[in-house]
Image (cartoon, rainbow, N blue to C red; front, side):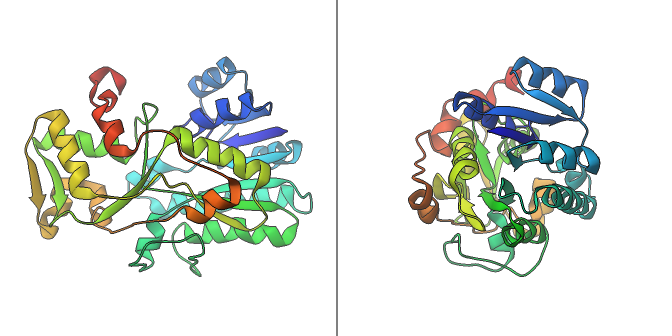
Length: 304
């Protein structure tokens, strides 16, 4: 299968590409910089130059492919405060890809997140069947799923807030470690009993391939290794590795400690991936978050 990937040189993309190549697929990847293009060329990937605003490039690349995996998102815009702009760009990109694939029966695998379940008010363990009418990133997820009614074998992988491995250099785990270094303490909010689900990058990459190859149209999937790690345990493990104290942060002071993470760092987000495992025979095999943190690669200054 000829597969087009957005976000090809990013954290998840850098794991998905080898997964696809080893399975015999051909890969074309979107690259917005010379550095990204060189990295993709080195992997044997055909380069499509452009970004999420280049809708013609996205449409042409999708039309020429046998399947699409959409990983890209303007995370820099989100972190700088332009979340609305990032959401709009994502929606336009999905629209261009979806229009190019309409009626083809080709697969499109989109990306969403489990934190939206907590944002939506789910207080129990989140399930693949949990759906919301609208909201940030929810609209993009619903758009991808809706393409199943337009002749696209569409599916969405919901990623947990912590996708961890030695490939993770800019995700929430490195951010939390950076904050702990800067503040001289590893923090959690309140009692720290809120839970975050996690998955190893390589397990997530395997799920993307399985979704591309086999997911039924209109399927929501959960890339879940650990269903919910108490946030206090995450902070304690970071503190142990950095040799700094572990401290409870008052909710009123969360913004001063966690910065842009403060709006959701205290969310309780336990999430199940049971249906996904059963549907696609997907079984995570790599270390969980706490074990991965104890391996030390996140704390090597040269790794960043």
